[in-house]
Length: 196
Image: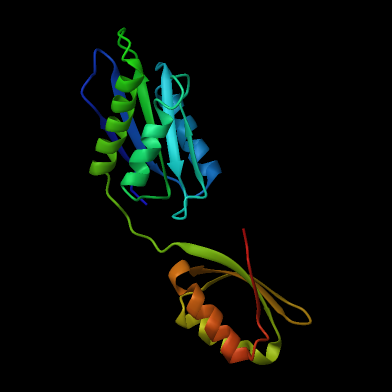
């Protein structure tokens, strides 16, 4: 993840390229960020963007916003992936300078602006969390709570009925240990399912 940042590259044949790097963990937030940049720079012709929201690369998307296909959004996305970052959206705004750059020129300009913005962005490391649902009988509550605490799990919601049902988030690198500890501590009576 990165802290929000802004970078304007030197003009290329009269066109200005302005890159905004904005933290975003989910598609709705990324879309809000894109619309925010569009509103601030409403007089620009193109607002091309890409996002990578999760480390596994399941939530990636890019958009050329009227530029020729794969000449803007894809190079921005390649820069995000090349910097090995996630949890962000990069919007590169172009003010057209009157001279066409060609597809190769656009790829270099959009990718270059995104890359230089990412080079300057302050990276904020955060644990990647996975959301899980667990169900277990009351008699293993102490063992379950101990395993959750040891593995940095955060309770999101709990229900108490015939058994305990809880939703939680756990650092992705602690998930395997948590699953093993819950299995061992409860003799296999804790049921675990991912939440998407």
